[in-house]
Image 1 (tube, helix red, strand yellow):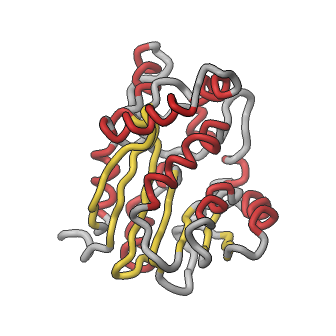
Image 2: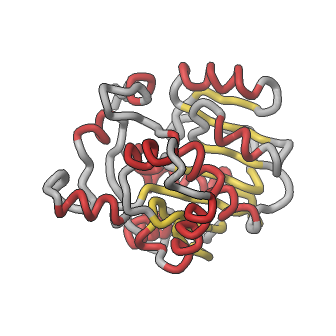
Image 3: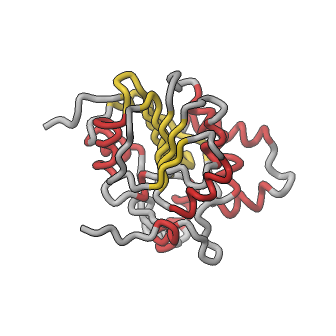
Amino acid sequence: MTNKRNYNDELKDAGDDKYAYGFDYDVMHPYMVRAFETFFRPGSLLELGGHEGKFTQRLQAFFQDITSVEASDEAIAVARSNLGDKASLINGRFEEVQLPRRYDNIVMTHVLEHLDDPVAVLKRVNDEWLNDNGRFFLVCPNANAPSRQIAVKMGLISHNSAVTPAEHEHGHRCTYTLDTLERDARAAGLKVVYRSGIFFKALANFQWDRLLNTDIISPEYLEGCYQLGQQYPDLCASIFLLCEKGAGPKA
């Protein structure tokens, strides 16, 4: 079947519906790195879905050997200007791309929910790309985040795991919970060794962006939301699975 998705269009903002918010870059990215760093293996890193390279730049503090794959040629052009020769950038779809080797660390953040066949791509991670002693860092937006549950009660979305029209325009194909994310990881043969959440979140991203421009939100408050997320992972903005290479899916 011919792929008809336009990955450049999916990254573009339409009116008030943004692909990425300041909250993503300024709050979530640093806390994702903080959640990951104690689990990093020394060696190489593969980033699946590097977008414009902003998260890649944060990973450079931990790795010199970075490969990043991105489906949007427009996004990867921006990434090249941001990263220069400090990372190997590959423009391609995960379903088709041929990578030259295996990697000690693989990171996929807020990408799996965009894929038409997520289990097939996760299977490539397990079977083709992850070193035997490597680790896979998988993060997705959480369907059960309080901000989404409040939106359900307000009548803005039909149920926690709904994909809204705006999300679909930006390429979302599903909205994960911890149990469905782990289901797909295991179906692909990966071994889940740790699960958690990143940042307790009761407000929508656009609300966070407005508040972050005021003195209402302090660094201490942000830290409290991060720590509370460790206690209540199912109420976080994002859910996080740490996986290792498995023997493959069970028959």
